Length: 332
Image (cartoon, rainbow, N blue to C red; front, side, top):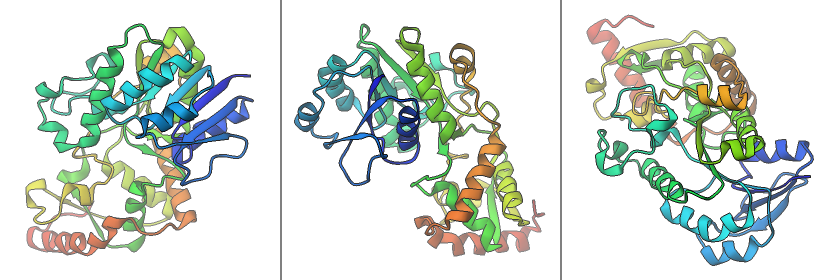
């Protein structure tokens, strides 16, 4: 039986990783602050990842592997090198496709990252502290050349039990029947990661052991899509006919891209093919529209609270109607 420690294993894909490990008979411990329950069958280690001494106090056992989903900067990797590396034979860092330079020409392959923050061609990765933190974390991790580490780089993740509610916003817009703005036509192509496939892919990295040491892998669906594709598939699942209104980005007025596009298809159009993982790990992600359909059906059934930015929906509807009337923009 393998002994695994998961940092950040109580929600979304982190929780699914733990569940899959338990199904495989692993002895699993989950380190978290204790705000959410760990999956039944897992051992809970309560500590704040930000507190180095608390981390040192609870991580005392040796583990076959440690999966770190909650490292967001250089200091977290420094803590890992001092505390976690000594306790494991394989350290897996869940990074992000945001380590790629969005100002460069896609697609983005594993050898293209992490980029030097000083040379980013996109302004500070659109001022994203998250992206810069992941970049600095990878740079620090790669400096430990003899440590048994691996990196996975998912783009935005979708799937059931998503606490971020990003996908939910699109579902609510389709359900309310009002017009939906598509910035620049919603035709920018991008990759997404399905939570189930991501969790499975992470376990495949662990199974690769030494062959995955010192390696990074894009983990996402093989096929990409556009925001238009995504909304039309959501509408199909929800049995609705959406009113899609194309508007140039420069005409958004007081509305922001973040308000209209929580998944970042315009701001962060990551095209990060998972071909390396498919070739070397046997990674087999489902088609992206299947993942979208599964997520949409879960959102409809779950009937979650509106995402915070839904309060700005009236502004989107107003601009859509104004743009359609003034410019006679065709729907769809």
